[in-house]
Length: 189
Image (tube, rainbow, N blue to C red; front, side, top):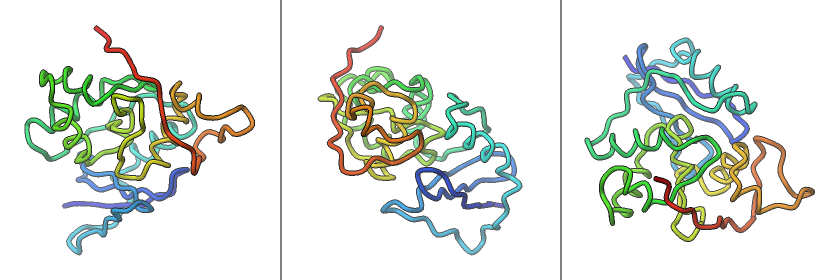
């Protein structure tokens, strides 16, 4: 049985879907790809109690890693990329090229970008922490405003540098209309 629940967050409504045992999907409902639950799915918040509590902690700035049973469906390559995403520390960013090297596919930035874009568990599996080689905040399923807000919430230096103290949004608030550029990162050993 697949269950679903929609919850309000500082970045807009999120639809959670999964079984009684594991979370399989998080979807930005205010973004360009709204998910409509299938008729066979059952609406019930109970299977998502842990995820809802951890998301609340994350948006309060009290949680840096999620500890949830996850069951994303994807190809072996996608699963490897999604696992590598979970190793990117809170508040840090890596380029698509760096991530490609981490999954042993040097020169595979485009393939990593495609896998990153197919991530069914954004926020929980932090695909928002991947940026362009030139430091730009490139595509994101929830939209660049949400990507910027998540990085700002985490205190990522590249996002903090975009605002003066007076312009900086409060944690969890979406900053709109600001050019999104981060300095290039160096590859870590």
